[in-house]
Length: 146
Image 1 (cartoon, one colour):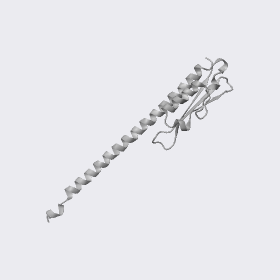
Image 2: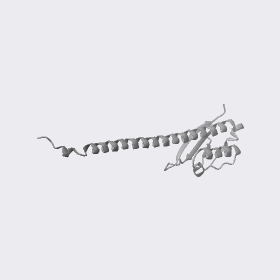
Image 3: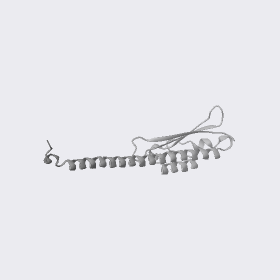
Image 4: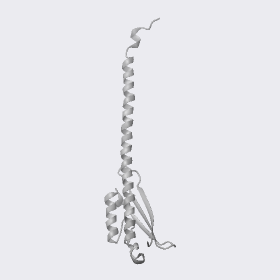
């Protein structure tokens, strides 16, 4: 027994709509993937800036350590507050390059290990515009005489 032609009406339209739906979901997934990629690039930029800034202050401390490490303690920074002019300039640079770093403030801690020299710990914190929690970067260096 042959099927009646009236039973097949609208099937092509239904198949076309399902095909369009599947294609639309694929396009939406690609757009979402692109948005995540852009966000990751922004976060990578902030991490790179933080690493550069930490290395910059460590290098400046090493160059300006003074006789008997007399200048090293001047670079101590707590919650973004610095009294030494070069350290103040660096804090201003951090606030310019890292978002919301004025809220979290950079820290530079100076310690004197038993082996001599100085241990410098630089902590940078920032919060990206789309982030829920702040990010941080910690760098530790030992300053000694060459």
